[in-house]
Image 1: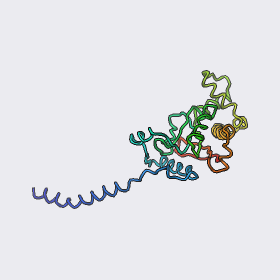
Image 2 (image 1 turned 90 degrees about the vertical axis):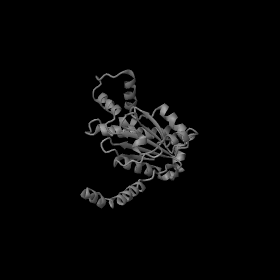
Image 3 (image 1 turned 180 degrees about the vertical axis):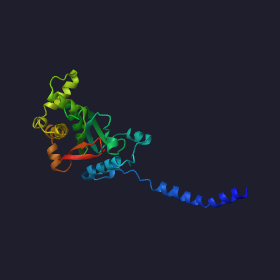
Image 4 (image 1 turned 90 degrees about the horizontal axis):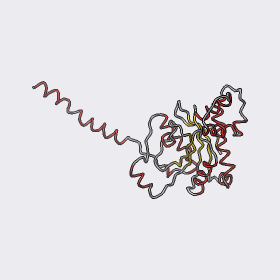
Length: 237
């Protein structure tokens, strides 16, 4: 009993050190950044910083609480609109490490920008007054993959509505301009589809060019890499 008592008496001095470590660790938890305080010209950089946290496996998950959701019940004020693929591996809020109400997200297979997407973006610009639009493609996109397969082999049969997606991509001028014999055709087709989305927004929504010139709106085309988790800008208007 004497040895037992001495042993644990000698370890008592570790308790205050443990408390200090716990307190230091608690205080070192990074505060969730507030995207609402970021100047609009720095928003894309801010989102890329969030993406870097995500890619480095150190996200802070800001504003993802029930209290935040109840606060948003009064109204939404997103700071950016994102057109992205429906792919389950491409959730914009997680990719950019943002919270509820921060992003106005429009998703479909292939992140195509057609009439319905244009309507949603027009709402985001005119009503929600977002200063940033991101057309976000991704590597190994299934919709682009189907387009590439169909382009090389027209015998491949798809259901009616999947074929409509393929036909939409096939009709894009940016896709038509791509040489079919390049070794990285799939990768370039993903990029061309993103560029089409950027051009469609600029050419279809009234006053977009004016808003861009006045620095009130920024349109960015980007690719999300499923391997690295990082987002790369390929076009910036």
